Length: 268
Image (cartoon, rainbow, N blue to C red; front, side, top):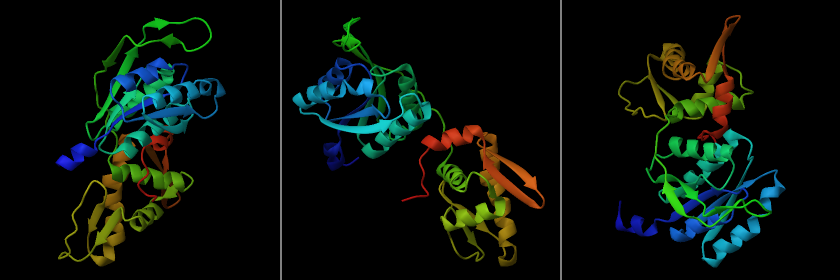
């Protein structure tokens, strides 16, 4: 990494907004955070009652606040929102607070840390409170200790497979194999080359199909099946069925859930 890149690094915290104040504000202040992302519940005004106090506490410490909405009861939307924060922050250090929201928010944030930490700069942590409260107001006060949590990795499909899933979903979740090949070509995800002299490197984002001009579609369907469809079947993300002479592809229930939080590289 260059010296300029190091100077531009930011310490960023991400925290679900629940019924806590100190457990969001104090770890960010102690860590010298430059920015805090708050995951705001989309349909829960109760948690929003704490928003102004959290924002005021961070503003007093001159910490920038940004917000992103999510459905606090939807695991996959929590993962999606956390993934978007990680993506937007690029090479910055992102510390994800697992103690400021509900259990399902903690699980979703932790899963995002495990799936989308390609930079190695995403770290989950837990803030242990000084005291739990039983009366109205925040659930706890103070922060006794901020504990880094162990890091694990959860594999996700490579970009080519993920983008294929988005194309299927955007086609009403059912598409003929032949039409899927056309959509992949239109999106630049499959490139067909009949000239052996043309060198196009194959990457995790693009499938290169080589063959004789008159047999390109057959070659393309075979490569797409072996390199894209079959791996997605092994992930249990797609299923195929034969109707008449046509082969159709659709997402499974697991595929439909996964495509909600996996990044869509087929749209600007």
